[in-house]
Amino acid sequence: MSRQKSTLTVKLSLAGAEAAGWQPPEWIMLIPAGRIEAVDGRVFINGVPEAIVAAFQRHGLELPIDINHKMELMPAGEEAPAMGWITALEVREGAIWARVEWTPRGARALKDREYRYISAAIEGDVRPSVRVVEIPAAPAETDGETGADG
Image 1 (tube, helix red, strand yellow):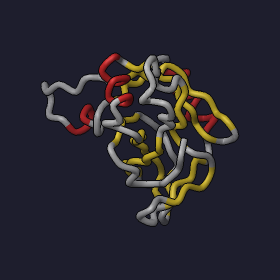
Image 2 (tube, one colour; image 1 turned 180 degrees about the vertical axis):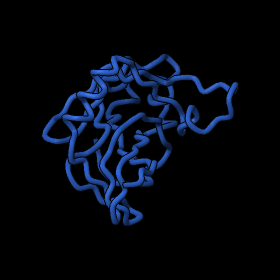
Image 3 (tube, rainbow, N blue to C red; image 1 turned 90 degrees about the vertical axis):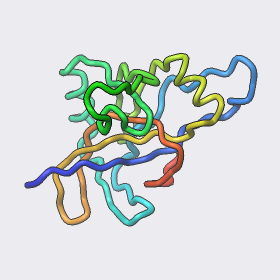
Image 4 (tube, rainbow, N blue to C red; image 1 turned 90 degrees about the horizontal axis):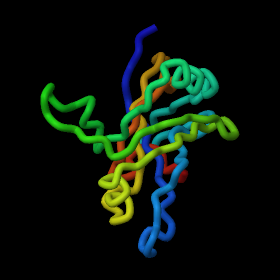
């Protein structure tokens, strides 16, 4: 079975970002539960969330959150600073949630509403219009994929 990379975008909850002392969310929904239909018609299946969380825990590495997947797309040697670090994953009612330690720059970008969505880079087995998801993530400017609200 071939493997394919794609992205899945979920809206972040930034309620109250204009208030003094606001902090970005500590936990964000990274991948919704079950069958996810993207606005462009693609269908994703988050069918093994526990296995994804277990793999993250096994590797023992924090995952960076960057801007627009720069770490994956930039030529070697160019900067792609982290906006935050995924330090934990957990399954909540079939969805994958990430605990994020935001950098000051990342927190500021969210507070200023420069970014309002998180886009997980996913990779999985390709079947007719179905993908089984795995991770990293990047903030995104628009909800170009799912319309899901985390």
